[in-house]
Length: 124
Image 1: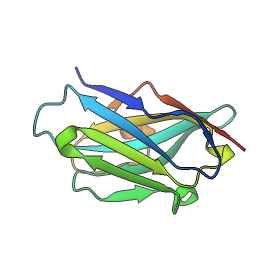
Image 2: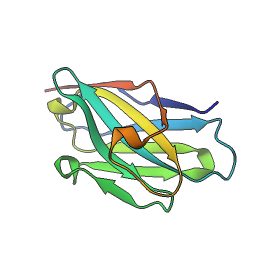
Image 3: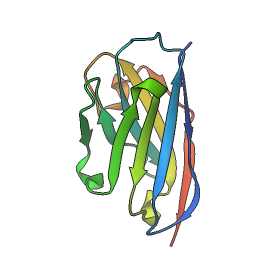
Image 4: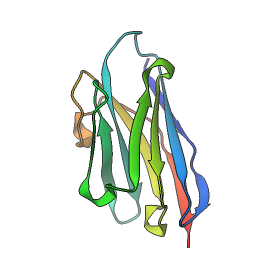
């Protein structure tokens, strides 16, 4: 079975920097897959943030460009999301997702696998 586990969340202060991680396990060695980051907060629903495809090319939603950076370490089967600087409105549960294949996606419905999330709380 394929499992995704997020980590790196917690209580942080606005203006600071945070890096979230997502470790993928159970994927057959050599399989190409794209990944994405999403977040969800009360009253907002699930919001797309960024995606990185099988070639390593990334794409972002307009609202997070300049502050969010998505990257991956294929050898370590790990996805990262860096946020700098943090804002109080970044408070949310952050989820990583994966889909087999080369193309990246910013639609949640396009992903096959999901992590359980890591909570990020940003204080003023």
